[in-house]
Amino acid sequence: MIPIELARELRDAGLVWHPADGDRFFLPDREMDDSVFTISEMVVEVKTAPVGSIIAFNGTTEWALDAIEQAEAIWIPREHQLREALGDAMLSLVRLDDGWRCTTRIGGHLVESTGESAELAYATALLRLLDARRTA
Image 1: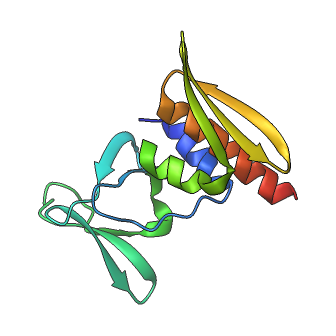
Image 2: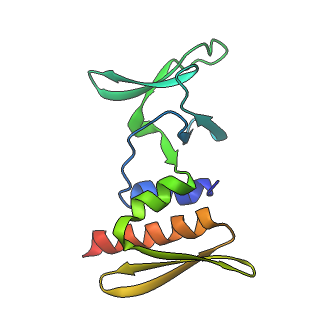
């Protein structure tokens, strides 16, 4: 799993989340920053409401939390979701002695991003891609 702070940076850089079964997220600024939740139709599901998408907590009577607006949650994308978000910019992923290197093409330049895991290398590459798109 990528660090929560990196997930926050990806959201702030413009990564769009369409919640789906199995997605992980956290709720910042609610004294639950260390708790990671998973969308599951059995317990936590996405519903449409007049305010937009909400994330409903079913069967969680021990919490004073029935539902939150999607915008309040921060998605923690998984490896395949990060790779998919990189799209055509992604060129390769290579195993190194001490981690992984993801090579992307950003604005006509080859950019290498490394991480201890493939997931972290993808996330770092995606953050660089999103940042480049914001400043272009």
